[in-house]
Image (cartoon, rainbow, N blue to C red; front, side, top):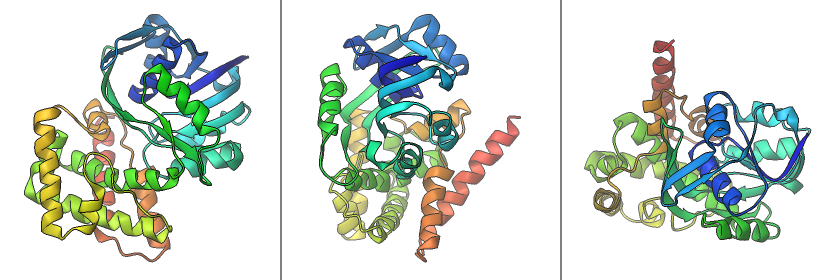
Length: 326
């Protein structure tokens, strides 16, 4: 049976970036992986390029029953199948767990598995891309905030300090739930348009019609956040959330288009992870993000027609694409 300081469930792009930095900094790290990804890491270690150059061996666990204890469990899988994956880890002695997944369902799932007292909130404004070679291209290193779900930094300060010292920018915050919702509010429209247009991020942000749709979807998701008594922050991801939510619609559209033009010059190859998944033939994060939000809105009797329509369109694209590949 294995125990470690850090256990990372899902060494895709972001999970690999975090795990590699912690391992290279001398921390005890194990990754839980399967299939080709597990074989690749066993043979070649974790390999990061781009913003960092790291090649480091790391212990790989393919059978969750082999893990006995972890001081910190980091969930970095794609959202499909998370509940089942956590069920297989209920036996693990976890000190604290947090998830860097998209959406806001993640904290609920961790609480069910390990209890609220062992769960931190987290979000990642940090990104990369898992390449066919098994290497990970590290493209953005902005922030990885951690915090107590009930408010305050608490245990998050020590963990964030270790991650930050290892090279992945991290900090402890006292308003993590508001930050998680703020990221998600922006992410929903960005993810949806990436799938529907199949374009690099700058292209649809700078297009006037796409920018208009983005503004309207974002405002709908903000209504859902408000129904959960969440006050959103000024910044989401990539674009200024406060302007998009509060300015007149025409001004909000121009702010989104300006963001697109900045990305066109600064990061022309930036693609949302959902587009990466689409092009690689991987399942999209639909039910646990868009679907979860649409069902929450329905339960609260909120009419969010663009969110509802986008959810069904993205779900249909995912279903037809996967069935065609069988």
